[in-house]
Length: 434
Image (cartoon, rainbow, N blue to C red):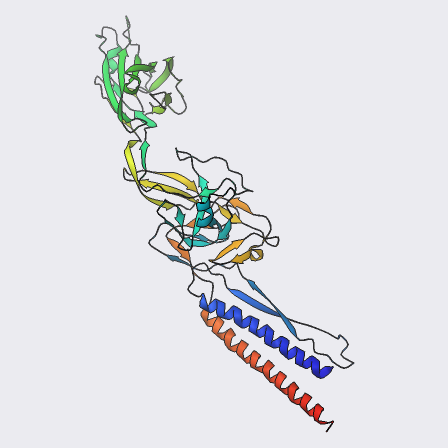
């Protein structure tokens, strides 16, 4: 019994070291594989008979292998903006291009820590191995809905339209015109002043707001009050708003806005100095300045200084590239010099990353051992930041693996020697019958 147990222990040692050799060879083979997480083997002794005072029976050894998914390799810079990696804990959600092409309902989701994503002929961001990046699609204006964080059903394949043309309408304007203080004094001629400011409409066309400033001339003294009408070319030059504006004549705040009353149109916000104008097909926030604050409309001196401009908006623009920021927002960059958010890429986290099921192409799937997932914003909670122009290198340390290789080979040879010795002893025992 003791001799045969020695043989069994030697065979168990061979199997355990062969298993360890497999993990070492896999690690060395993938030492240059981006996103590869090294595998390791651990040995555990097997006790058959716990009482050492009796004849000892060798139990041998057993081994378990697992992948250290929670380890992070160093990031290396690249020239591709959609080479993505997570600097720290967390994963990106991906699916397969085959599932996308089949158009099945719920796409199968896998997790990965890095990937070299490029747009294919259909604009879908995918790796050379067919892993498709998943994310939350933004609204046309670049805003994002409040997506649930415990389900991936709202996520869609990230798709770019390389020939995309978009409008970038004006949503903000400023009006810093100076009106002549003498025009609202008794005896003034009541002359009106006009100015026009161009802005970009919803279809990328150039539209114009026409301002007419009419002074209120009193019988005596100075009224410091003006009537302002605003007409819009996108509304067939109709007057879309009218206001009565009074300026401060005090020594401390002379020339600044004192009050703005609405005749027609949306009300003026005294705190922000903004009037929300309903222009043809949209809305524009007109900033005329807050009450008592310099920098907006003024009434000073004897000269009219028409100062007004659209602070955003451009003609129709074409997509020229994309980039991701630290918050996981994928920005589309356009040739008119502006950008907007088109997707958010959340970071997936699980309680036990090492419990994930490993699959080919450095992807992992949820399991009972990994625990439930949660979708975080990049860099929020326990997760790391999403990084563009980067890929995560393999966690394999070749020097350590070569050292382990030598140790494993020695251990394997020693177990072979045990088996050879047991075989010789059994032969000697058999020869006793002769």
